[in-house]
Amino acid sequence: MRVFVTGASGHIGSAVIPELLEAGHEVVGLARSDTSAAILTAAGAEVHRGDLDELDSLREAATASNGVIHLAFKHEAMRSGDFAGAIRADLQAIHTIGDALAGTGKPLVATSGTSMLALAGLGRVGTEADVLDSGPRIDAENSVVMLAERGVRSSVVRLPPTVHSSLDRHGYIPTLIAIARDKGFAAYVGDGSNHWPAGHTLDAAHLYRLALENAPAGSRLHAVGDEGVPFRLITEVIGHHLNLPVISIQPEDAAVHFGFLGAFVLLDNPVSSTQTQALLDWHPTHPGLIDDLDEGHYFRIEHNR
Image 1 (cartoon, rainbow, N blue to C red):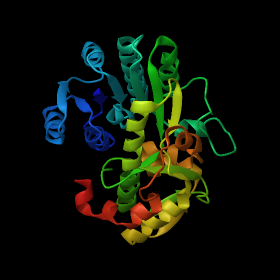
Image 2: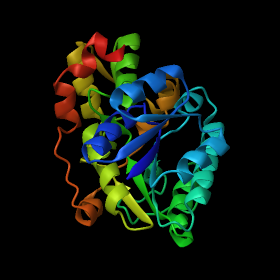
Image 3: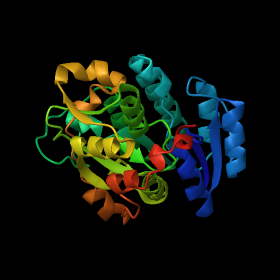
Image 4: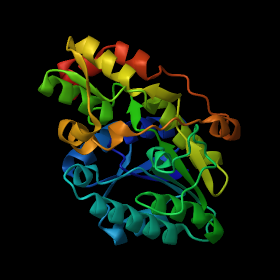
C-alpha cells in the first residue's frame, strides 16, 4: 500500500514509518523543511514537500495514495497560545484529505486524544465508545468518523497524554522533567491522585498500522497501555531520578508552575483499550510509563538534544 503520512518526521511518525516499511508498505511523508525531508529520506520514505496550510498539496498527496495516516498537529502554535489556530488547521487538513478520499474506500487514520474524555466528567474509566458532541479536537475526531458515510474507511487513534519512549523528545514527560529541573523541585497538584493514561511509542505505531490495514470504517481506537498512572507517582519518579524534592502545590498555582500544561496536570483521565485490543488483536508489549522512566533515558542530557 502506498501510504501518505503527515507528521512523518515527528515523534510518533518516527516510529510509524519503520513499522509501515517493515510490513511492506511504501511511505510518502509530508515535510515542511529541509531537515524533515532529510530525516524522511534517511528513514527510507519518499518526500512530499508542504505543510498543513497548503491544502492543494495535501489533496494531491492524498489522492495519489492508497491510504493516509494523519499525525501532524501544530504543537508549536498550541504551546505559544494559538490553540485555536492549531485546531483550525487540523480540521481544515482533515476536511481536505477526506474530500480527496471520499468514495474510494481507502483508509484514513487520524489522531485525537484521550484527554477529551476527562472533559466529559464520566466518573469512571473511559472507553472507545465514549463520544463527545463537540469541542476542540472533538470536532476533528467526529469529522473523521463521519467520513465512513462518504466511502472512506476512516478511524481515529486516541493517544494518551503520555506517549513515551526514547523517541519522545518534546512531549509531556520531557516537559515535566524540564520544569522540575528549572524550578528545583518536582510538583504535583493537591494529593496527586488524578490519573494519566499512557502508551509506549512503539505500541502506538503498531496500532496505527493495524488501523490502516484493518480498522472498520468509523472506528475509535485507544493507544493505551497503562489505564491510569497516578500523577503523584509520575512526579515521585521524576524527583527520584533528578534527586529533587517532591512537593504538592495548590490548584490555583498550577498554571504558573506548569505553563501550558497547567490545565492538563489537573485532569483525571483513566482510559481503557480493551475494545481496541479485541477489535484489532492489538496488545501493548513494551514497558509501561513507570518502567520506561526507570530505564533512565529521559534523564540523560543527550535525550533532550
